[in-house]
Picture 1 (cartoon, one colour):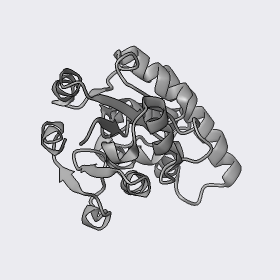
Picture 2 (cartoon, one colour):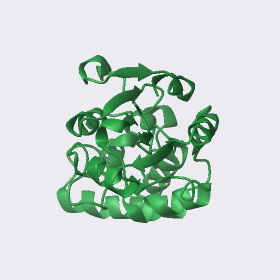
Picture 3 (tube, rainbow, N blue to C red):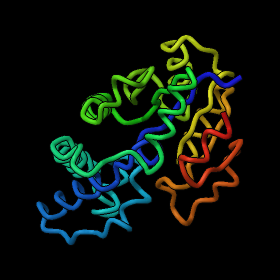
Length: 215
């Protein structure tokens, strides 16, 4: 019996790519670099700030400069965290179905809490979710199972009662490592070069509408 649905944040629950891409382009403009199209940036969003900075400035960037640009990127993103970010189409209907059925839902993300919590508060989701586990909530981050177990502890459920939904291989690994059912959100930030069939998930969905049939 599935009692709890846990979501990754970026690319699964919320479409944050517009604001994250906009913030990267603002950084590129500050540094007198050419901006990138959102289509180029989108597949890299789930991989976080370091991946985005490397996308904009190159993989061979010097370590200290990478750190400085990452910090500046995060400052810009914090200032623009909820301009165009929104729930994926069909997600609000799904959340209401989950709530109406007396089940619980929560969030397990590698995004740091100082970005996760303001975003979810601004969107009115913090008050509805049964837990918010961020990348700095526990000592280990996904794909380690510790954040998954911590979410279960906060909600008061066993991991076997949970489905975890994400759009990255580390999401599937984290869920599997915690003995949860796992679902890949193929509508998320997945690159053409990634083979999702090799990730070992229990199911793949093309839209939030398909999630409920797996509960």
